[in-house]
Amino acid sequence: MRRDKMMLALLPALCLVFSAVLSAEDAAGTLPVTWDENATAESLGLEPLVLPDDFYPLYPWDRISWCAPFGQTEDEGLKMIAECAFPMSAFVGERNMETCKNLGFRYILLDLGAGCDLTKISDEQADELVRKMVASTKDDPTVLGYSIIDEPNVHQFPGLAKIVAAVKKHAPGKLAYINLFPDCGTRLPPEVESHTQAHSYTEYLERYVQEVKPQFLSYDNYQVEYSEDMSNPDRAANYWESMFEIRRIAQKYNLPWWNIVGSVAIRETSSPPSVSRIAFQAYTSLAAGANGLGWFLFYSVGDSYNEFDFGPIDKIHERTITWNFLRDVNEQTFVLGKILNRFGSTNVWFSQPTDKLPGNPGDLLNGVNIAYQEEITDVAGTPSVMVGEFKAKEGTQKAVMVVNLDFGRSITASLDLKEPGTIQAVNPLTGTSYTPRQREWILPAHGLLFLID
Image: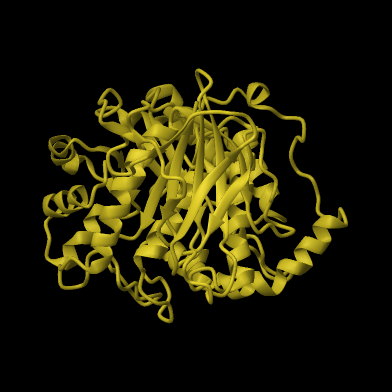
C-alpha cells in the first residue's frame, strides 16, 4: 500500500509530458468508451455512505502500526492523533478498538483485502472472506468501515465488486474503504502501461462506479506539493483536473467523495509543508464540496523508495511545526465540514478562470469583491479566489466558501448577491455566525464561509 504511494511520487513529470497528447486523442474521439454512458445511480442500484450530520470524516492516512519505529506504543500514537484534532483514525487493528472508543474515535479497520488476488477471487471466496472479517465488529457503531485496497487498477474491479457486495451483505451500513488513483495515474504514454490500466481518468472512474458499485469515491492528490504551492502552472492544473473530475462523477451518481492530500514532504526535493499549504488543501477541498479529508502522512516514515520528511511527527518521536499547522487546520475543517454537511455543492468557479477553471457564478452571486490591502499601492498582481456555492438540503439557506488562492498575502472579500439577502460570516473555530464587516479579511490560502438567508 505505502509502496504504491511512494512510486506515485515519480509520476508528475510523466504526467506533464504526455498530458497534451492524451488530451488531443480524447478530443478527437479516439479513446474507446467502455462504460454505459446512460447509467444512473438508480439503474446501478448504488447505496451511498450515509454519516451523521454532526460528523465530518477527517483522518491521518496512516497505519497506526507505523508509530512503532518512533518509540511510541499504538495507544500513544492514537492519543497523539486525537490531540491533533482528528475525530477518527485509519487504519487500525482490532487490538486498537478499545483505545479508539475511549478517545471517542470512529475508525476504519485494516486490512480486509490483504492477500487477496482480486483478479481471480470468486463470489464464494469473497463472501467467506468478508463474513469472517466482519463477524466480531459489524454491529459496533464506532467502526466506520473496513480498508480494502489502495489505488486499484481496472483489472481488479470485478474482484472489488464482489468484496463490496459482501460488505453490504454482512455488515450493512459499514464502509468498504477503497482509495483511487488521481488523474496522473492514467497520464502515461501509450507504450507505458498506466497505473490505472485505463485509457483516461473518466474511463477509470466510470468503470469503477459501474463495475464496483461503491458507497463513495476517495482519491489522493499531492499536486499542491509537486507544483511547489501551485507555482508550476501545469502541475497546478492537474490538482484541479483530478478534483473536478472526481467531483463531477460523484455528483453524477449521488456519491459522497473524500480527498487525500499531503502533510509531509513526499519528494526529497520538496519544501516542508507550510501552514498555507495545509490550509490551501483543506479549504479548496471544502469549497469544492468534498465530504471527507485524509492527510498523508502523520509519521515521517521512509524506506528505499522514498524518504518522507517534515511530517507532523518526526523520526525522533517529536512533534514538529507541521503538527501545529495540521491541528489548527483540522479544527477549522471539522467545524466547517459539519456545517457544510447540511448543504449540497451546486457550483465552483474562479475569479481568474482559464480554459480548465470555470469562471461563471451560479444563481446566487454576481461576483465577489476582492482586494489586497488598499493602503499599499505598489503591490503587484490581482487577487485570485476560488468560490464554492452551496444550497441547503432542507430549507432555503445558501452558503458560499471564498478561498484566497494567494499563498503569501491576505485579501479582503465581500459578496455581491444577485438578490437581497442577509449575509452572515462563520467563525471557523466555533461555528458561530456573525454580521461581517463591509470587507472581511481572508488569510493567505485560507477560506471564509458565508451563510445567506
